[in-house]
Length: 139
Image (cartoon, rainbow, N blue to C red; front, side, top):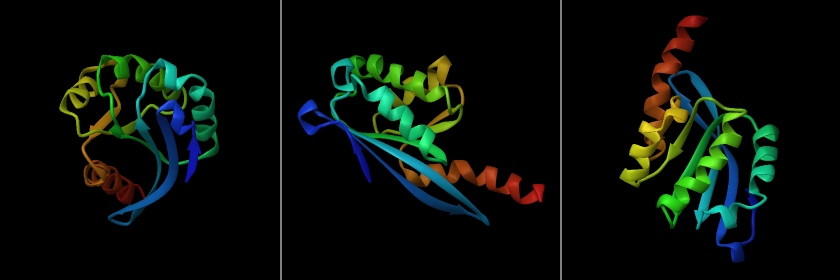
């Protein structure tokens, strides 16, 4: 796992590749996990580092925010800036959250039309199942 940020800034951003197989199709996931407090202060300089991860790695993007400790309006304002950086490269990706308010915000936010909020990795598998069936019939 690569790590961005310093723990004394109250944020850690780690990334890793995972593979998931749905039917006969193997999907590569780029998982970026946010831990700690996410706000403008802790995200300073992170968008450049995040961009480099996004351009170096491949796969379906998964943002895991389950370990963010401040899922409030401060988080939403700061995280929206990160989502603009991400949307330059990805139009469709997943955000894992267990917080119902954040889940609803993602569902209802106009800029995130092709972004799917999920509660866990099992839901990603279910969401990719239709894709895998379509790909099987394209061959």
